[in-house]
Length: 486
Image (cartoon, rainbow, N blue to C red; front, side):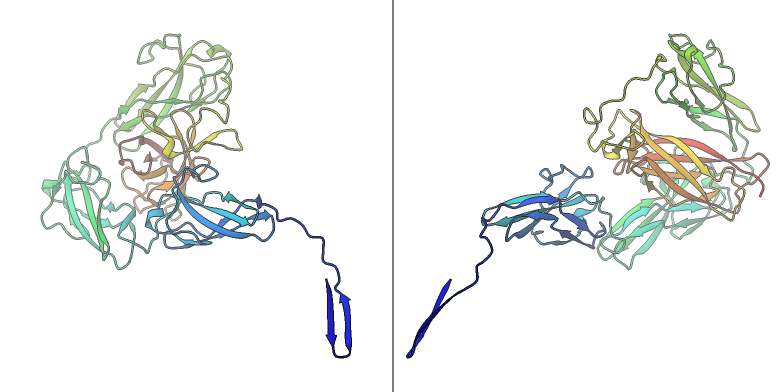
């Protein structure tokens, strides 16, 4: 540029220095995707970072989208937009609970625009201090289930705007325990406090407590699990073991592959002690009792690895339950024909349930929402730490690995455990992680037995959120932990 200055005496000119080389405006392009920071909890605020872009003189626009539990497509195109959520921050509301959020960032300049989408957040959880009452750990009952003894109710754990008030109603259920919410159980008149003394009318029944939580925004009623049957005396009649659900064999029936047998479901006076015997049957699977299938020498653990002798045969387990009264035996159904080699695993990108991911150990992990009937959830692996339990003063850990009947590892399943009879307290339902494992910290109470070759039996339930407690794809399993004198 040349500038000329003039006055009465004359004029002079001067040129400016040169600019940098003039370049064309380039279309925006994303080189590192946007990110979201903040905790996915109702009432808290998430913040979006634009990511990294190329292009000149960029302006950014934002759109938050609400995805399902699987996180939606990577570009968020199948996730509904959140109306009005067009800034770099977003405050989570009640509509977001159970969902996963993404943010779509659009970069624009005079040459054009481009959009990039963040990864999905973890599932948004309900705030413990916002909204109407919401139960997160169901109520529980403690005490001795004998006529004349006092029972105590715990309200469980609730979230919601404070203050929350609680009302109690004790109900008397039949031998089946009634419905999970206790709605078909007989209301006990005037039994509306947190404690209740068992009377003659309660003998032979099972008890529940129905807790109603109220705040300024709403009301919710939740029932405890049903107790065991109320006895007339402190020493109920001993009962020999009896099988209610047959054992099941889990795993791929092929040479060199690990098979695992469950114990099945049993009733009888605790403690029950289980022993196992693997059987080698003909190709027809043998008799339902397994009586015509030879026992495999030395195969007396819960797990067994098929050998060359098993190829072309079917395997069963015979489980024997014993207590001080007697013993009973139940046989599993037969496996498929044992193969010489395990079938190749399914390709990781075809034919898999929604949300499937491959874990470092090669297993496929799927969300619980991808399990539907006729498939079921299974508490496949149980680990106690320590084992045996030697102290009532220190909690012990119960680890449960959840799979489904297709063999997929299942994440975000709800896992619950309680001892039978009630000798421990636990944390309520816990969610399984990406690897299918859930951890429950169990605390022994004063009646927890130690030593004398005694075991404590625990009832484990696995279910999908939103399903009834004992229906849908849920499943149950009885397990036991050994005890020893400290």
